Image (cartoon, rainbow, N blue to C red; front, side, top):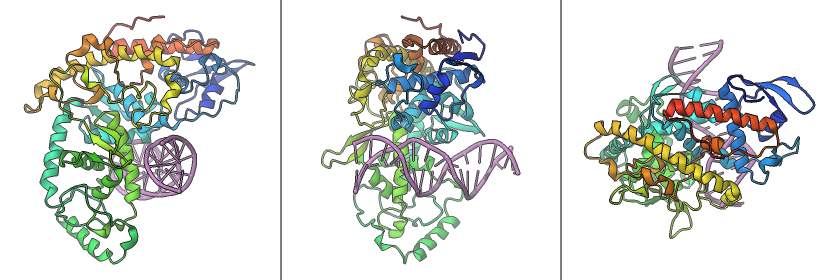
Length: 461
DNA sequence: CAATCCCGCCAACAA
DNA sequence: TTGTTGGCGGGATTG
C-alpha cells in the first residue's frame, strides 16, 4: 500500500488479522479486495477510516509493551487477547475527545464524526457530550450536532450552577425523576447523615412519595421533559462541591445525597447503586478535565473526589496548571481517571521516553491554540471571574508558560497519538504497517496544518 | 469479595 | 417507520 497518497487502497500484510485480534470494535475494517498468502489488498472507505485503524493500532502498541512493535507482524500469534479496560474508559475517551476538538477553528461537532474519529460507539459519545454540555463546554445545536463553546464558558456555567444550587438549597430539589422522589427537603445539602439507606424500610412509602410526585408535577419542574440524568446528575454532582464546604465526597455519599436524600426513605429505590454507576461515569470525565481529582480519604481508606476545577492560581499563571499532584504516576498512555497507578508501570518502558517529548510538543501547540481562544472568550467573560485565577487542567488558560513548555516536566498525560504517529515511527518489520503509518502521518499533517493552521510538524527521526 | 464501570440492549423521542 | 438519544443494569475487570 505504499504511501497511499490520496488513494484508499492498500496492501496490508496481516493487517486485518492484527486489527481483528485487537478487537477494535466500532472501527470500520478495510474491505478486502484481494487476498494472497501473506498479504491482502484492502480498501478503506476513506482516509479517515485508515486513520482510525492506525490510531487504534498505535494505541494498542502503546498499551501492550509486552508485544514489541517489531513483533507485531507476527501472523496469527494468538495475541493474548489483551484487552485493557482502561483503554476504553470514558475518561480517556473524553481526553481524546477534547484534544481532538479543543482546537482553534472548531465550531461545530458532529456526533458521527466524533465517534469515528475516536473509534468508539456512538453511545459513548453521548455520555461525554452530555456532561461536557452540562458544564458549558458544548451546546447542542441540532440533532447530531453540537457547537463547541470552549472552556471559557465554564466559569460562567459553574457560577450559575452555584447560584442555582444555593437558591434551591432551602426548598426543593433539583431531582427530576419520574418515580419516587421526595417533595421538598429543607435538608441542607451536607455530606453527613444518612446511614439509614438500607433498603430495609421500604413499603409504606408509596403513598407519601406518590403525593410528593404529584406535587412536583403540578408545581415545579414542568419543563424537564425527560430531563433524566447524566447531564443533570452531573450538575447536581458539581453543585455538591460548589455549594458546600465539603471537600471530599465519595461517590457513594454523593449518590445518596443526590437521590431522594437521606431523610426520606422513599429512597428505597434500590437505585442508589445504579446511580453510583452513573456517578462513576461522570467522575471519570470530570477528572479527565481535571475538574475533580480522585484521592483517598485521609481517615478512611475510602476513595473520594476532590474538587479542583477552579483552584486559585498562584501568582502568575506559570506552569503550575499542569501540575498534577502525582504526575509521576500519570504516565503517558494511561488513564488519568483512575488514579490507580499500578498498571502504569507496564507502559513505562522505552515508549515513555519517546512519547514524553511528543507530549511536550503537543502541549505547546495546545497552549498556543488555547491562547487564541482565550483572547476571544476573554471579551465576553464575566468580569468578576478573572481567567487567571482559575485552572482547568491541561486546557487551562496558561497565558505565559508557552515558552517554557518544552521544559515542563510535569506534563499531564495526554494521549498524543497524533504526534506519536508523526514522530515515533515504530520499527515495523512489516512493510504494510510502516506504510500505513506513513499514510497516517501524512493525513495527520495535512489535518494539522489545515485545522490548526500550522505548518507541518518537523519530523525528527 | 468489593469497587469500578464498560457495553450495548432497547425504550422514549424525533424526523 | 427509521434514525436519535440516552436510561439502565448485567456482568467483566480491577483492586
